[in-house]
Image (cartoon, rainbow, N blue to C red; front, side, top):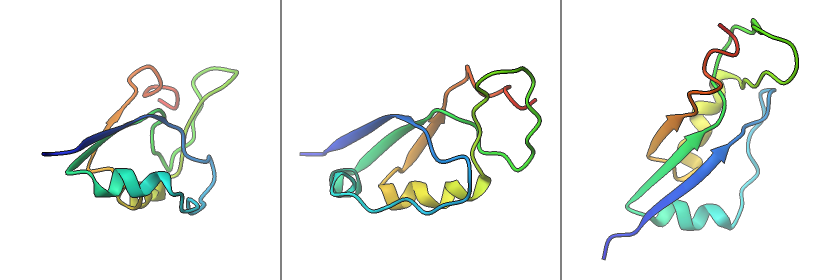
Length: 84
């Protein structure tokens, strides 16, 4: 048997910060493949293109994805242009 896991709508903090460990990650780390949907762009350049909620997270968060067990990440295309 091959176990595949998925994590929907990963919304990392908007400031540089390590993720706390969670028992949930034991499931995603032990899967043969874990796909995660990164809900925000990772960027060092904050340039909001509109007012209101404009999501972004530091590029350094990419290092946290393997700690979560994520082996493949997709990005939500509805937020990708929020900072240009």
